Length: 166
Image 1 (cartoon, rainbow, N blue to C red):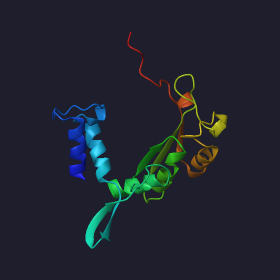
Image 2: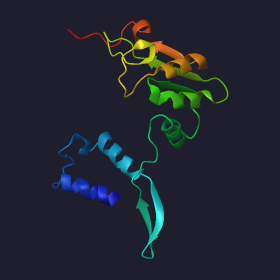
Image 3: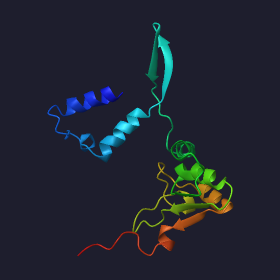
Image 4: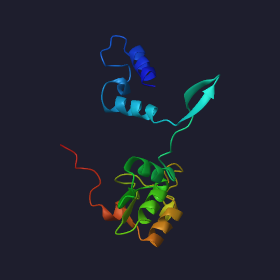
């Protein structure tokens, strides 16, 4: 895998300068993140023509959304968090997982309901339904029922972005 990654990097940067045609090929965090991602893809052992091989599967270890978030947390941290913060349907399972632990826990979900200063999306509370990354009424209702802190950008934030420099 490392050979494969190095071969691609060499093809993109034959002079070996470290600067590729895309920013993500340049040495730094983005390039390392891409290499780390490739190295973490799911693999399995199998025999092919009498040879033992580790085969790369066409799937991810987990999808870092919905039910995949607690899996990712467990895989990377190895323990249940004491606090979790989200802003959409994709964060519900992470908030539930956090709340399911013993001792003091804190769950917060941000309701993007300020179209004038940022964005407004729902469809919770009658906000526009953007489909992707939605904050559903069911998530809002679960937050109320479970005692999660719901922060309204419109009502709870005095300032959303830093003041513009003049």
